[in-house]
Image (cartoon, rainbow, N blue to C red):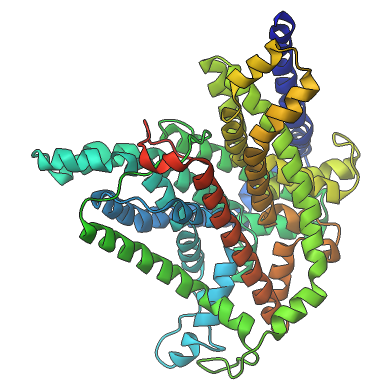
Length: 559
């Protein structure tokens, strides 16, 4: 027992050292190299940042990016908050499967919604063709407003789920207070908003950061003068060593980190710990349940309508300048599986490697957090959560510059760098699932096994691995899904288009008129796979923790 007690602090120090080494090699050194490259004067003898600020194109791009990101976050909150309040007022919490489906925006890239709406509302067919003589609904003609609307619609379900999970456990108490004479206006101000603010702030921060770092959605709308697309084009035109691209990357990092810190300041606690999902008892009035179900059905129907353009394109044989497709078939699915199957292998390769890295590091950090004092636990949690503020475009440019200079990163293959970039950006999402897995580890069984003289290998095989297996699989799937939609890094770091993961392959296909059907078919398959995995995960969680639906959470922590 004494040896075991001495071993635990050593393991904790080893885990902290592992995290520090990972962040030093694959974040601090590349970003530091980026900073050093922009501090000196360029070939013209002028400061890089001076040139950046003197050019109105880059000033306008920063203003446009901030406007789009802030507008998307505010509009998403405006869409989600009233519905979350209505569900709270009706004392009804969606089933676990519906709650997890609300997190689909994290596993589906928003450019799919953009291209779906263009198929549905564009001038080439669908409603856009039918209304062409009266109004132009093509999102590609809306400019910056189109990007704001698309990103807000995409991330609104995420904000809704976060606010519902934060507030629903206390809806019954609020109803009792209302029956005792408290007005709903006062309860909304004193109960609903304070409880929902952590989840709302987290969701708005994620929406802001994802919109700021988004490459595929602005490009699909023809918006090339935002800061992320400009940095992307600078690298493509002038190479990875371009100083203006490096400066734009640093601006992205600075803005993202500032936005994350401001968002974290509004959170009661950084939502990096998943305490399980707890549902309230069913509402006592059947009418309330029916009304709440009708509200969620309407929301689901609206989202399905937005994605119907992509589904129609996938199943259409010929669809050009008509309201409905002229013929139907599965030829796009057959062609997608025949010609683009390599993209699935690439996804397994890059995202699987990133997920394995995240599980290993996340499990080590979760082990430290489980035994660390409160202050150290908060500090480590904030460090990992801060990785959410690292833009994929900036990280990819930093990696490319390091590879080009031959220092800092001991790899010369961008395929490896892509997996590392995925892992760095996915670690904040994998950590909660790893912490959840460790909480399922029975300490009493471990102590009993040690006292009985069982070897470490036997304890690991008979107790530790079976107890952690489910949580680690969930962590792997979460990290895999986050990496699979990270186009900001993939568009810069893939060695060639033939080695592109599935999300980038979908984007490339849907940029051409001949490949749009194949791209839509791949997108339908990807969304269906995400929905199936989330639903199956919800069923497994409910099976493993059947009492979770019958007990109320002690606080509204956001998963």
